[in-house]
Image: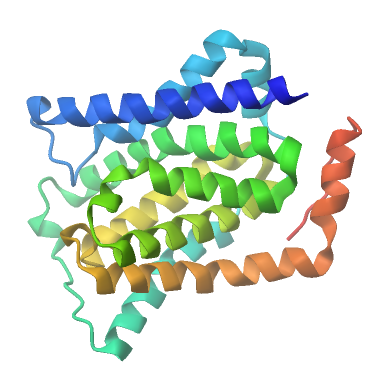
Length: 263
């Protein structure tokens, strides 16, 4: 049983981290501005490819997903809410909000938005479409969501070169968003990639246009982390109140198809 998740998990993470480092080192040679697209985002996709080369049947099953209602607009609205809550918190706390003119970006906004979606899907095919269901089968929705959030946050190794508070705020954000997306995974089924990719891209665009997250300033990233927790909380409380994840997980372990809608 352990070999069904330990080996694939280890291989995925190793390739995702190493490939992201190599792609990041190669980016300057391409001349591609990072605010348009960061090549590191395709590290998780290469991790999926590595696991698929070893265990193609398992990867096909995990990527196929389960049944669900389909696309969930509430997930995308939650992404917009993250930015809105963070900006509102900044205003209340007197933290400057460096609103950026979309026309000042390194490419037309439509190009940046499309590239952000592409890069986000390059990440989410690994985090939410492979690693989340892989760990969920063993640990259930809560623990798997937190674990993926920690891995996702630590994969952004650059945050640890900044202050401890900055890293703590960023990890809080990735864990909270991972919980939100982990429970959304229970709802959207086979539409996980476009929904998770859309959520991820919208959050990135919010950071790019409204929050000075890339400067290394601690205040904005702490507000971002707090906003992610507040937006994820209703999802977590709704699922906890229904108590359904445990039943869904038992059904998975029993090998029965499960189409329970949790939220």
